[in-house]
Length: 467
Ligand code: 5AD
Ligand code: SF4
Image (cartoon, rainbow, N blue to C red; front, side, top):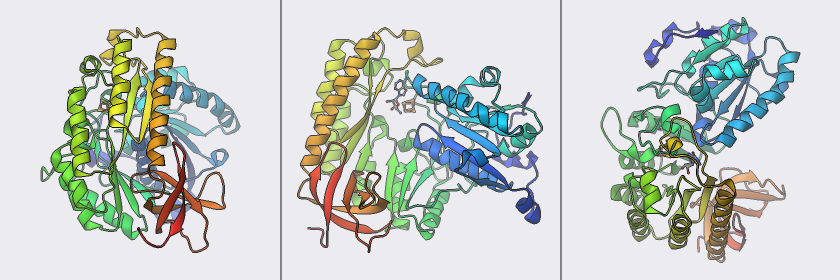
């Protein structure tokens, strides 16, 4: 087993495997298959990994049985996410038996968290590579093909892969990481341990990437980070609102989204910037986690329910029809029935359009881990169920309110259920289904009058005018 020397500076990339040239690349083509789990950051990281390995003759494939290298890009945020990976590894055993020199690698947060244990526990794993070490993949894969196992899990204070062109699947919507890591240390969250300290990419290079994406035919970008509103340009100190404005101005027809925000850093300037540009989507994902001040303090979220609600009011006063979504955790340590009721109460007050709702999952190394996991499983499940039911009812009601209105839709393509119908999204990020018409192309912007709605989907008919 090799543990590579610790390299944290991207500029040291020259110490890695030599880049094959011309002919050599063509004859040595190898196939890379990546499965991505977890958040959107991982989706973009997988594209970065493909971008790094492309230079070494690796071509992406979506056929796992043809792959020379299989990577699982993993998530550690809840135990369930890790359980899925162990199950997946069991399925991969027979590929390894069939093809002796197949390389299997675990990337991402689980690699960072479990390190050596992963190789010891799962003999079919050849490589364990954390989120800041992807530049080493060419060297590590080469060594693994010669039978040497590899682990690279050093976290970096500077790595942003700023110079790597992610290899994206064709489409109309692209993800762009603008910053990496998180310094918030919410007490339940493993991310600061698996993704390290916060660091941002230079504003100019992000704007240039968005411009290139527009030239390549993308119509929508989502600026990504664990906590985008702590963004700070390392060269000019410009903040996230400055970045959003710069991107919006540079590519005025591109739809611009971002995620995720921390309520503490949701500044007036940012809300005003969103309001000032038509091409910045009026949609904010603002995780609240709990409606109880006592639990919020234990979570180290650094705001109270009242302060959170004040931000929501501010958003609604500046952007009246802003779509809002959130994250909520049920059953955090010591959570009482009263705390749980406070969460339901806050949900009723805000009336989110949507929510990602989770059962608390204790994670080693976090502060909450030491608080114990004292809410019984059945209580956690019941509370989660109540949260989900309430949210579904609110989402349903909010979507009914849209019936009769005309929404601008960015057309994505055939709907998943019925190819006779197509789907797209509203500015507020709501999936909308409409009848297929032969003049439609993915990437078109059309107007759709909403005629029917469920809690998750809008249904409508194409119209010519916005009103
Ligand atoms: N248990 C349950 N949910 C968690 N999240 C993060 N850590 C945990 C955990 N230990 C949720 C939070 C966060 C989202 C990405 O995942 O709600 O906002
Ligand atoms: Fe985790 Fe909190 Fe950072 Fe989000 S802000 S990644 S929940 S520590």
